[in-house]
Image 1 (cartoon, rainbow, N blue to C red):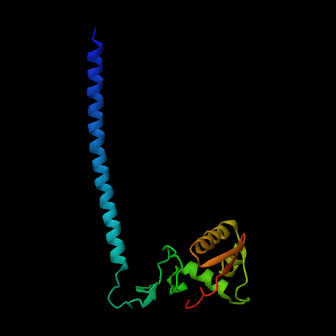
Image 2 (cartoon, rainbow, N blue to C red; image 1 turned 90 degrees about the vertical axis):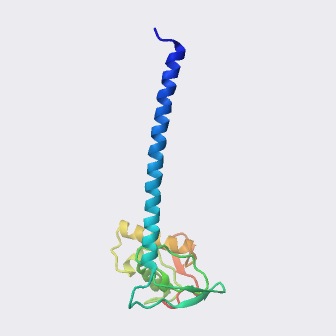
Image 3 (cartoon, one colour; image 1 turned 60 degrees about the vertical axis):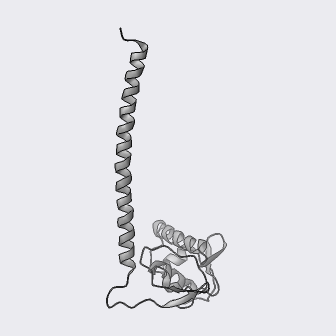
Length: 164
C-alpha cells in the first residue's frame, strides 16, 4: 500500500508537469498575439500612407498645432469634435447624417428622430435600419458632433456643419 507522502509527491509532480505545459502554451499564445498586433499595426501604417498619385490631405490647425485631416474610411472611428474638424473627416454614413441634419429640405437646426433620419438618407424605416441609424447618431452625440436635447431627438450643434 502506497504511503500518503508518496501519493502527495506523485500528485505534486503531475501538477508541476501540467503547470510547465500550460506555461509553454501561454508563451506560444503570447507570441502569436504579438505577431498579430505587429501585423495589424503594420497594415494600419501602410493603409494610412498616401499612395502614388493620391492627393495629400490638407493640413489644418487643431488646438494650435498642425494636423492632417483626411477623409475617413467607411468603417473608421468617429473622432471627438474639436475646432478645425469638418464633417468630411467622418465616414460617409456619418457624413450623410450630418448633411441631413444640416438642412436639406427643412430648416437648419430642426431636431429629427432616428426614423426620420433613416428615411432621409434613403433607408427603409424598419427596426434594424432605424437602430443602425440610432447607434450612429448616438456615437456622434457622444463625440460632440450632434446634440440630443430630448431623448431620441437629434440636432446639429452650431458650427459643426461647415465644409462637408
